Image (tube, rainbow, N blue to C red; front, side, top):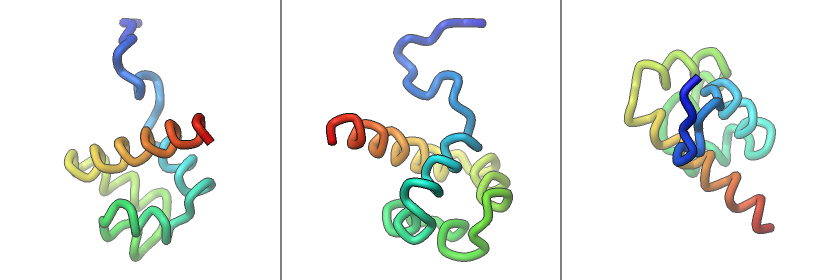
Length: 76
């Protein structure tokens, strides 16, 4: 497996990212911070995964929000 020391998301699945955000932030806070409809309506892990896998710009927003949350928690 190729090492990617400069990629903080290396080895972290989209499903893991969403599970972390759902558990730690909840759907409402996620919708407030990442304005995409799959967080506002039809709030399920499955529907969000389907949408984010097909929509690169939305996935990037979610990944950036995840990184922000992780960094914020480390400094709290």
